Every structure is written in C-alpha cells, then in structure tokens.
Image 1 (cartoon, rainbow, N blue to C red):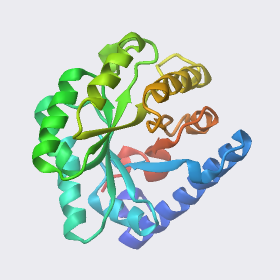
Image 2 (tube, helix red, strand yellow; image 1 turned 135 degrees about the vertical axis):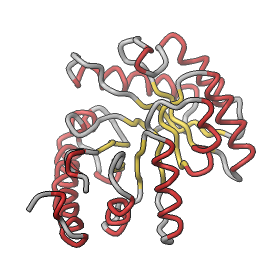
Image 3 (tube, rainbow, N blue to C red; image 1 turned 45 degrees about the vertical axis):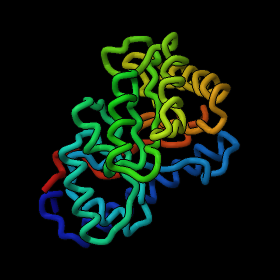
Length: 241
C-alpha cells in the first residue's frame, strides 16, 4: 500500500513505528554521550505535512512541532487550537520581518533570529500579541557564510545584547545547521563552543538546537538539546496525500 492510500489509523501506526525508532536512536546516542535522554527534546518538523499528522503525533506524545513557513504554520496552529490540542510551535525557517507579528502570535520559540532588525520586529510584535516573552534562539553561521542565514561569530555578542535588551523576548540559546561539505563533528564542536560563549553572557541560554534526520545522533554527542527531525519520522515529502 502506498503512502497516498494509507488510512488515518494506518498513518498513525506508521508514525508510531517511526517515532519508536527515532526515540531508540536518541536513547542510544545519549547513552554513548553519557547523557540522559530527558536532556534531549524531539521537535517533529512537519512542514508540507497535514495538520492531521500533527494531531497524530500529539496523540503519540510529541508536542513540540517545527515549521518553516508562516502561512502553513499559522493555518495548522488554528486547526490544532480548534481541535483542542495543545502543542508548542517552533519556527525554524528564515523569517522576514513582515511575518513577525503572525509568528509571534502562535510560536513558542523562534529558532532563526539572526539580525538586529528581526529582533526589533519580533519584540515589537510580541508586545502587541503576547502576554509572555517570546522564546528566541540565535541562529549562528558556523562557516561565517550568512547568506544562508545565521549570524557570524564576530557579530554574535552584539546580537545577544540586542535580544536581551528587549523584555518582550527571552533568549534561550542558539541554533545551527551543519554547513554543506563539513563533517558534522566539526560543525557541532564549533556550535558547542559558541553555545558556551553565549552562556557566559546569559547563563539561562542553555538550549542548543542542532541536528536533523541525517546527523542528529552526532549533534547529541556535542550537547544538542533540541533535535529537529523530519523525514525519518514523517517520511518523504512525496508521501503526502
């Protein structure tokens, strides 16, 4: 039976089996690193997948959901709220300032804060649409190429100051993507060092969002606390019905 023919219950069973495998791999990576699995949070990246999959994942105990397009994420947030299902939305994609108000209204955390102008936009939006501070992660550019998103190391202290200067925002840590062509270990070792620098200025900024389907076990070995898992949990994008 192909993905387009799966019934709701069959799809839920498929997600449950995938989730069990992912959790086993997280447990194994934590054991190898001498960490407790409780120190690693799984974020299910559901971009392009329907709200029904998010509901199924929530029923399986996954309540941290990652999205990278505001229009899609906002619609899913409405659908989950109307269904009475409470999840935490993580905005993980590059964010334009004109989307800040929309994202601030539903997001638990924005992982892709990488420039002062976005800090201002998010803080101003949060002041209008939220009663609590918006969690933020600063996206760092491991190789210094900011064209793909992320702040260069030399500009990181100033961006930390920018975020912490706004009471509408709460700096929770950093996010990174291993650059193409880099060994994951090299990238995540550098991410760990940058996290330590940020914690030196903001001790509560302990979160490290690093690792995706292809490299999350290695990210865990270097201290990742949030892993962003898409394809190995939900399947390929062609699986959509």
